[in-house]
Amino acid sequence: MLLGVVLYGGIYGLSERQLRSHADPVLFSAVIPTDSLSIEVGRHIALTRGCHGCHGKELEGRDFTEDWPEVGRAVAPNLVKYLRDYGPAVMEAAIRQGIGHDGKALYSMPSYNFTNLTYPDLLSLMAYVQAHPVVEKELPSPKLNMTTRWALLRVNDENAVDLVKNLPDFIPFDERSSEARGQYIAMTTCIECHGLDLRGTAWGNPDLSIVAAYKKEEFDRLMKEGIGLVGSVCINVDVNYIQDVVAHDERIRKSFLDSICRTEMVLDENILSALEHDKAEHGKRHFRDF
Image (cartoon, rainbow, N blue to C red; front, side, top):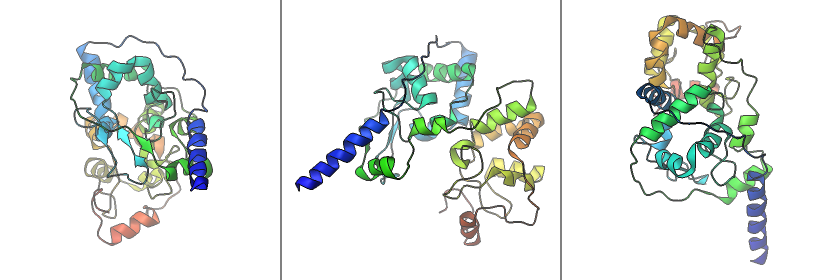
């Protein structure tokens, strides 16, 4: 019994220290805009970067305990209250640096997907959150279980700060450059599912170089409907973003493809991961099918 208590306390204490072992957040100071254009741009960013998917239709927050029980208790906070309670500097640290209001590294927040947001886009996102009405919802406090804490210590499980540090080099954003704009789209949208370098993940999301095997009409279908060449899916394709931006602008669509497609693949190869191909062969047609 005593040994168990000591072991529990040791894992908890060391994992807490690890979550606080990062440097202080980079200082951020800004006045959040209030004009209608900034708010609308921010709404677009929130929709296309998946903010509502985790934080709720009204940004009211969400408890992921039933969906993600192996972590412990993962809770996406009420974003409107978070910004009002802690201010833009703390909000920026969470969004782009992976550091929570308590100074600890976040675990489930995909900050790496927002690290490369331009300053205007980040402020527009905050403008949208600030202008959004508060929708009250009772939420529990987040809690990492011992399995997750042990993984942080021994299995090289990475927190949000670690993942931000591992981002590959990024071409500075330039509206005039198709390549830079395409990379900006991919590196602030697609990396959440397809890996920090867009080369796929160990849990089955494919290397995005597979898109080179697609014709334009096939790619449009993939983006709009989530249906791939062999009848399976592009899991978690951000349909809002594709429909709002990529699908309606040939220049952006081309830059998006040119940015992520570097491959020697021939058209008769299987373009899915082995895991996803097997699921497709057994009838998987939609991202909600498992």
